Image (cartoon, rainbow, N blue to C red; front, top):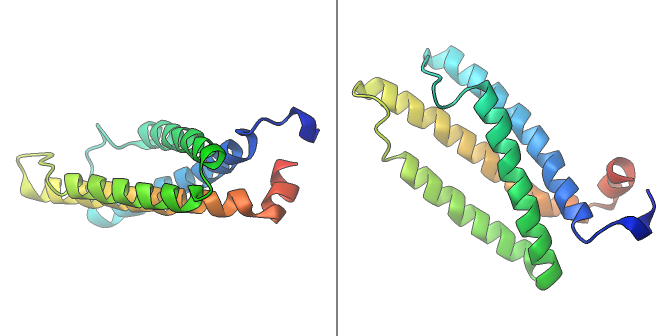
Length: 143
């Protein structure tokens, strides 16, 4: 691709989208395995379509935030990683308080599924700066 036509958002956004697609596949795999192992059946909130759309939208937003940080701070990687780790930990803490159903077992299983997905998303978010700085990724995938 012609490097003169690239915007400052190009590499951060595509790095985030690439990680988002891989994270979506991992979340779908986790969802299938978790439901198979635990027998958790309710899918009104967490299902295939919600995982696909929500995870990718989250990573698209993360790509925009990371691109803005890269353009404005020399410590963008550190700020991005710390901010996202804190955000994921707050989401996990909030998930621990969710009462999904009057049946205790269903609520516990829901929390397990959601926390697992949050951990996978958090791990993917932390990988965005790594791919952004990886020249092999840029050369082999983005060009």
